Length: 181
Image (cartoon, rainbow, N blue to C red):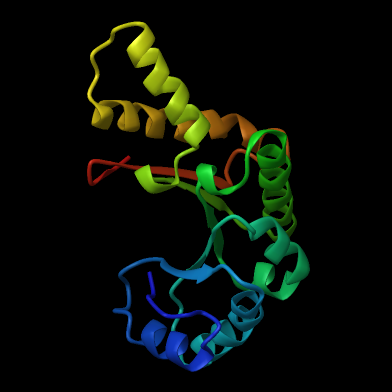
């Protein structure tokens, strides 16, 4: 993942081109309109320079808005990445996730659902913490967080059927104590 402001075309391009070839996907943070607007130009320059690394757009909270308002960004990215806890809450979460999936489907792009402790659905965490207390399960906080990551990861799997993403376009990934699943 680059550590640049994606809206800074030159710096992001420089860091992207310095990425070792064949290492795999590269993530760009797409968190503001300026970053979404810069993505197509960075991708064009990257390809012109002979760099073919797949680019994942890493979206936080407003991916549904940015992908809608910046269709060139949606087309230029190779994958979209979201965290379930960063898509919204309740019905809004479902609607916003559905919007991202529909845009992905329309552009033939996979959606990578990444889960980590920092972006978990807090409603789920609180519910599981309370269950631990109420049922006297004596689980450590780390165990509960790991359980929540697994639950969050797999519970989102059902979402891909509703918006029509298809069965081969969703990628699911979670980090549990430093291990990827």
